[in-house]
Length: 323
Image (cartoon, rainbow, N blue to C red; front, side, top):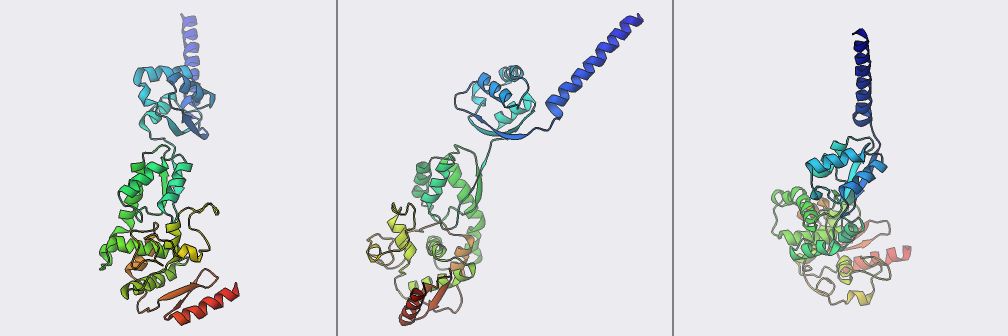
């Protein structure tokens, strides 16, 4: 009797030790983070083998069994997932099914980018199809409302979801400015001026002054003659392999596009880029008692402002000689 008790006790202790090792290996070890990818069309067996090879799960068989009992093929969504080594199989399965550990790519859109530049970046990171993104932006007339910020997107995000995320940021950050600072200009007109200011200004403290210059010119019916509007009209420059061509020529300034403010009075038809919060605020609160109508770059990234054309020409020649 005592012998049987001893054998039973020994077996029980071994079982407890085995259970403890199983729990430690499968549940208590902190694994190394890694990004795991499920390719389109992969079966549960293929995914299980890959998870095992990466050291994410201990048993491919156990994973396949759990999948068979609780899931279907549609639960294995193609994409990248943030997992770690030594994870319990059921945790991995639940994570993939729920999408909670879907890998997100961090993207930052810059102030003054046009929608095409945003689309290119989205395409380069496989976030969404660039043309689908642009089609939505153009159809909904959203240039100027794709708020420059940092975003986190999963690969193959629907284009509408990407657009909505950027517009939501605009509505949250910029939209309240129009209630706080009422103006006779429409929202689209403010964004159009702000987009030009964004392309001209480098330093925040100059934005209200540049905005004031353009608003002053509009009020007296003087053409804006803003270089960024010509750059926008010219589109992608093959020689420079970029948008926003540098060193505009007199031929460029004669471009017939309605966006060319050297040829046409008033504002361009729409914003030429997506401005920052600061540029929109500058248009809503331009520099007070500032009657300048001209400005020229002073070779330091800042600008020198003038009230008269003769004064402007003198400064322009001065900085040209200093180059």
